[in-house]
Length: 384
Image 1 (tube, rainbow, N blue to C red):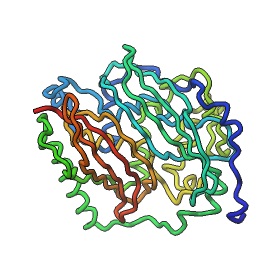
Image 2 (spheres, rainbow, N blue to C red):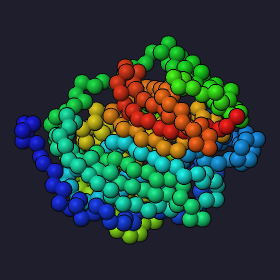
Image 3 (tube, rainbow, N blue to C red):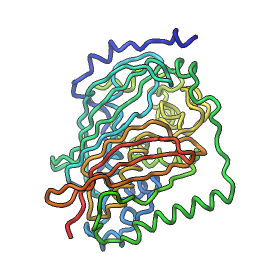
């Protein structure tokens, strides 16, 4: 199959889902304190506010509460499901970005969060990765049991024909890096320096921020199949029996290849047949054979986690007196096994409402400087 003969994308079935209120999965139980701890662990975020109740008790909240990034953990489908509607035969999807608006309430143990969902829009364009490719955006609104709005997420899904991605082989020759002991030692030093940046701030306020300030660099990795599996299992939805489904949604029948489809009948005997990591659309993240099946070179990370890394990066910097109001991050390159991820940020503007708001440009790169993600965020900072 030459590039001129790539398979086109038929969006006929997608059209009928645009603007339609969606159902889907909801978690059965309220948030548990260990859900929050497991999330911090899976996101490799050793901020004691999110796992040490003694530390949290001394802070602003007076108790252990969830980081803002945890919001996505309360959803079944990590915000992607409204952007994966309509049947496209033999397709797969990758995350293309997340835009978040946060409204104020913080998630605490005992809270029950439900989601409203809708496919917002889509477009089809040619990409080097898979030729004809759909970029679809879906909205998920997170609502507390009190009726208060916690956040809104607009997630971009990249839907493509698997055969096209294999034919174009964009990642051909992308070999996994082998790290020397000396290189790993240097990375661990960089991690310790980053952790010190929020541990030293402690419960104090982030004050005297000015335009041009650089956020401390955050290294994550090198990524392994183990870290990707740990990430996946930190999402509460991956626990067998943790959710139920209701209402209209076509995510499960989106046209996944047979090898990446869930097995609802087999699930009745063994939930592993449909839990995503062992079998299902997410198995390529931690199983290199299935990563190659969908056109990726090897195990790769979760786009939802990349978004969480950004939110954790911003909230660790702003401290517990700060609050991320909005972020809009586009994903351009996956986190692959063997790669390291660096997060960097710079304050580009300061505006004032009731308190200062820092406008921050964020980028995510590999150890070789390949741009993985980039975007802007607004973070409310405390008054003196």
